[in-house]
Image 1 (cartoon, rainbow, N blue to C red):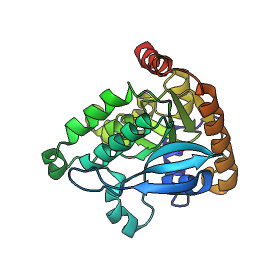
Image 2: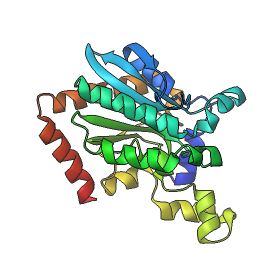
Image 3: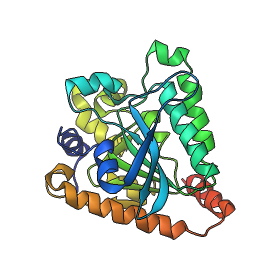
Image 4: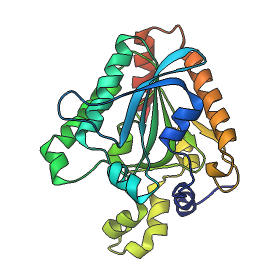
Length: 261
């Protein structure tokens, strides 16, 4: 049954919903976290590292959704600073060097919009990632696991294939903020949500999302092991699909995917 964007937002905001750390710990083996952008510092809102899945080496890059007041402070309300995007690019380049597939987990309300972020080059960090991720020589897979907000989410949604959990969303702005801009009335968020076309089923119709993984009734938090298995199977199948393909073929398929949009 199709859900409205407001219903999906209610489900993905459940504090028990798995976040990127949960997926990494339950899908991959031998995860080794990589810290820092080698320029400014480390950003805990983004987790990066090397892991294996069925003995296949991969690079994992994820945005962490905070669930407690302490986590919100630690992960900066899940809004990455420029050093987080640069850390992700550093790991993506390393993956390219060692021919490792890259798995992105997308779950953020957006990139941090503060003055400090802009002083440290937020806009250039995001645009550089967009430019370089489209031409990575290794297969890339982006998985929407929760809230995909604005350029912060778009940065990690440039991939050969984009998969979405059923209740996840992707949009340029939140419905409430969109209603405030479009209608000058934030109470009209339901109307704005329908205009934004942010739910997984609509995104698949628009060919922005390639695959949808069904969730149990009420959301992924109601049967986490099922979701972990479904997602693990999808990742293995996707990696094998691109196995043996040349870097030129991988880049061309990704480039044509986004040109066609």
